[in-house]
Image (cartoon, rainbow, N blue to C red; front, side):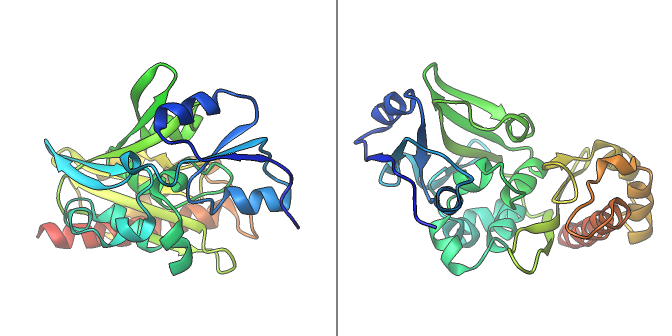
Length: 273
């Protein structure tokens, strides 16, 4: 299908972009890996595309005061390869590396992957396990919100996701994914980070959205992180937590989520040994 008719603007700065996004039908164009196919297929609508791809203030990766700041326009390829991310937030690097194919990773952005609500994507679950926050710019200025709240609500109308803020806790973290063979989106993905307070565990694909599984965390607090212990912790979760689909049952997805989490915990635990 061909694209529907819309207007296009390339603003010189973020403030002007926000002014334009206050209008009806305005959408942000960043990597475009989800929006443009959606416009072609008719599943997305836009009266105005506000192109922010050239805004340097939305790019780059830096570290300060124990936090990684990842600009929303940082590509998935840059995120996967950056030494700071690989060292201090390896679950983020692994999630970016698992996303799509090289062409998608070279064009797709961290912000777009976090904000895509049409299907499960890889970065939100890793960011959730890391205890990350997102920074938003909107009519009221800059605000920060936890990834857990953000995945439930998405980007507010008229706002732009400017950065992902990730606690730089070191290498005791991992990401595992079982991909849909046709789309490379996660059939199920799990991310973990082992902290002094116990494991942080998040799952996507098998659940309605990226979710932190606090019940599983509580059952595994203090260890051990054996496959048997992890699967038992997942079996204690309510089955309605896992959403059947694409030819799979809730029971299968719950088991798959447990297997992937056990693999991720085993890798993270080996790093701390």
